[in-house]
Length: 403
Image (cartoon, rainbow, N blue to C red):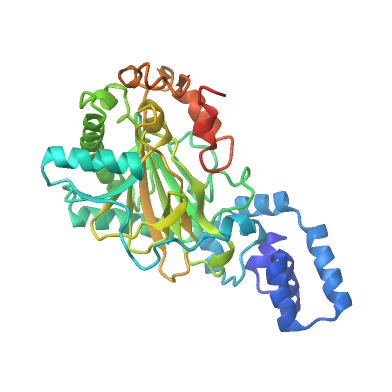
């Protein structure tokens, strides 16, 4: 069983055999070189590894334990459970193309001349789909309080966090490991606290006490900042500044705060699989532990943390509404090799109106640039998102006119 294999102190030989069964063939080869078993024993163990492995059962056992990856780390594991190991094609290019700290992703100061800032945001949204903003008006104290509160939630005893561990989000608050745990080919090394901020937030006392005040404070800042950034993005498209607000794009807010603890085998997994965000716009606060990577011109670039900066990225919905003027791009988070946890707080801005039709904005459609996408309800869009694993741009491609 998973919990016996990874969480209890059993006889050394049992643990060695159990760990052996959870490893990929490449790692099993390395173990073989170290332990030097006989050829017959090696062949028997290799054959039994696949024969006895029941991924669905182990995933279910892990999920029902409600301990999260932080619980696995706290148990003292030195090898990760097999269902966290990603295929070679996923992890073969985990090194980025700018590993020496260069900031190739645009960094934009919001305190500059407005027309210049609008132009920088327009170009960054069209070319990179990502940019960082500084001088955004949120104090360092507020940033630090938000990160510290999310860290505090994740570093509570397992039995305290377990009361929030659930797959459904009906209460507006859910703690879990990977929303796509049962759909994905391999799990990612992170835990997530998700809070529905709007249009209807959860009851205040239903949120975790250790972070509820900071979460609500962060939401107030996000509404102000989100509106300001959306206005400039609209102006960059030649639209009225309030066009996205008019379409309720400030109202459907979801906070997903991710906690990426130390991973004993970061070369075998990821913190977050490659994907694009489904909504309109995402604002991300991250601590100083790196790992976020953005795909640009076929290469992966590190988005290195800048003290006090916030990350902004275009979502699939905005690419669709802009009729491909702005781009949502693939991004991922590498497994964390640092003893210090990586913490990020993402706020996703989505339409609050889930039943009206959305598609390319009429102002951006012409004979020269016909609509690239079909119209659909946001409810239909998100239902499709939550019934598949995170996998690149398959969601947005599904809604193209040619499909």
